[in-house]
Image (cartoon, rainbow, N blue to C red; front, top):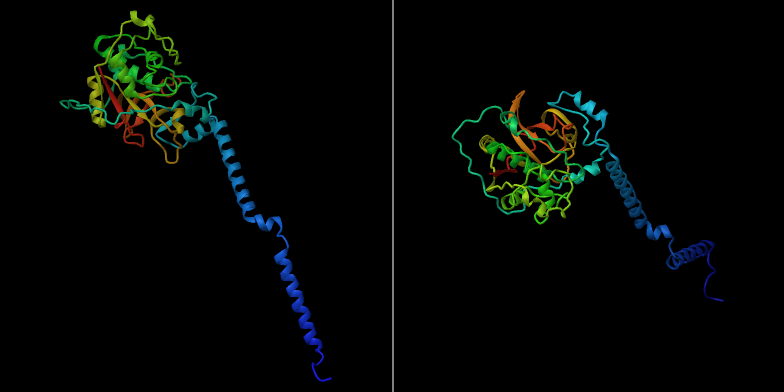
Length: 339
């Protein structure tokens, strides 16, 4: 018969291969992909997120468990020749960084504007001045705030107490008054503002520490008629000091001032010398209130003399020298409470 010719073996083989390719393509379209192929991106992202979570949890655990007083770190710092030394103290004994964070919930003000001080400039500023030395009868006790973010109440009451004493030699005034009696203005052991504390003293005044002793808690139930028999000392006003020279002149004229500072990790174990912030030192979020009692100069460094609220085993019997022209600038966070 005339017609088609038989296929050659080569053509037949090509058709077979085409059929196999077609069947393979059909299988790929109809078969379900495996789990990893489908969720490969999700699996990779989940692994990365898991690693990040583990790292964060590990870091958080280290912070919670990190004990502030580390003697090897203290020894290393002291061997480097820095202008200040570190050392252990009772206040932060066995305290962790996480626990210490709760102490720094203090601020300067919540007001939009605070009246600026007008400080007389009719005298030269000496190179050195220390209120505690110039008025030894007014060198009151240094408080230990304990586990309470109360530095605002202690620094304000202590500075105002010194100013009242400078005029009429009174006893130390009560920091407990501010903790226990001004719950409407501040938050007791959970922090406060130094301008609000000054407002309380203007309106209500402070009793003496003998009448209302310091305990370091915020029992708001105790401010009753019991204290009506106690004499109170009221402030006339307060104002914000604008620069370091104004601070110095105001201390000479009226007495110590209050300031808010930011706290760096090694400041918790400060011992002596002129404290400065070293590059890379971790800083706590929030503020801490201190009292500035004077100033001086040592080895070319000008410093403030500050009184802290961590007891007498911290620093130099509760005092510290803080570099004036360092990272911690007190000149914009200083308050004068006028008696």
